[in-house]
Length: 628
Image (tube, rainbow, N blue to C red; front, side):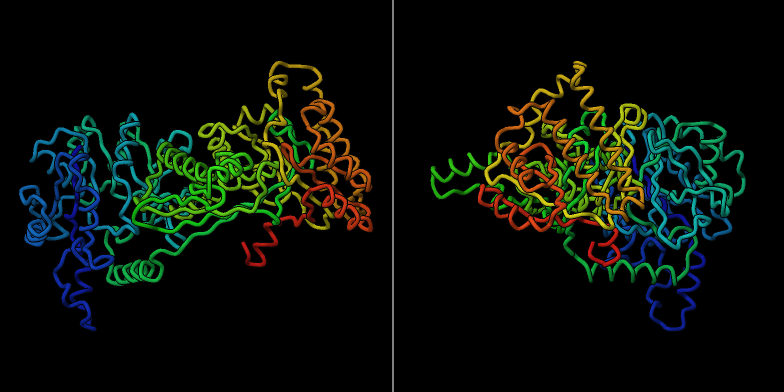
């Protein structure tokens, strides 16, 4: 592949304003081409692009197309930066009036150098917020698509879409479905702006002479008009790839544009060179329907602030995953110490979750056409979620890691919508680590709060995810949680139910339908304001008890295990509604008689269980209070 950097523009406005600036602050920049103006950290704007594409394993040659007026500047730059001077192409123009036009400049380089390879073309005089992106990832994505490739970015708040070429992109295929050159307001809702950063197949290059023959005026030889012509008239397949960073100094800009963005990026880099990113995801309890989330059923679950997983990411020279001193032990006091810890904690800590999330994240972005920067980072995690009691501890670590990666790489909700994010987290665990899991935990940890989920087969097959609704969390009753201090492995309790469900066993199918019906009844309690105001928690308590008995009938006492049954029986002695909040090892209760709460707590503690009052996590309240 060959890369061509275009710097043949005549910056008439910027040059004139620098020349006429009365402050004298910019007199040393008089006559200097825009691409050779100082960028971030003292580097010239063109230096960043040259560093990005100066890779012999990717490009056989790199060319620079300039004009006669600024040729000597670029010749001197080439000599100083180990750029082959013979690859600097002079288009012969000296003013804006006698310019060739961007497409003609590209065609000149291809024709004069007799180039017969695929081409990457980049405007070398535009300023990118972070040019340390993975150029190899762009080329791999281009090779995977049967057509041309355009790079685009999402306009920042305040940027007008009428100042850019705007693309409309199919989110499923990455195909460019529309290109509008500086559209007027209302013509499109898209805020995805195209920049002069393209990959073009060698077969498509032959269309350039045809295009230019129809466009004798330089003002009509822009890339925007070229792409409109290719897409609309030639009906070529063109695909889009997103860079999650902004671009500036595009086209004819002035001194204020240059100084504003230079100051913005420089200050940003100096003031915040490596500020840590810390994200939390919370444990969840299933209040109704569990475990029907894995059986095309319905469920209600709630995130709780008592227990959480926290991941911290900080930029670093190399990519480092830090083992947790307790959950990922690599040093032991003795062989007996190793034996005891391994027997109680198992062999699989959280480090594998971090690694699998990072691997899947890169894979997702590559497939979705998102080019990531080549920044490295150090990841570490902490968690207080009890292990192996069905409170979604593993998925909380994955969820928090994903939040950090999205913030670090500026991946938005549009790039990775919440329903797809929940699927992503599930896939990390099931596809990469072969953890038995369903969608419920991941949905609650992505949406947060009290969530109703419908995983009906029709929804899952038609859109790939369920119907997720956030419920009102005001006036909730008192929920409590108890869990075994020495639980069995979370997930074993599912026994052979999935195989029986897949085989169509009537008793299992009927139980799953009943779970869904219970969930809908509970949802109605949450959604009907009158029921909440009347505090009809007796009905909710009955539904929770019924939920457990239904589960007990289909899973059997042997599968549930003596520890879980003992906790359920103990709760019932104190008149509390009770059910399993997850796959086993814990119970969640609804306490209607708070006068017996202290007595019940002591009874659970005497039985060797950990007991706590649940603190529901309300994301709306946290956002208002500024504590997210």
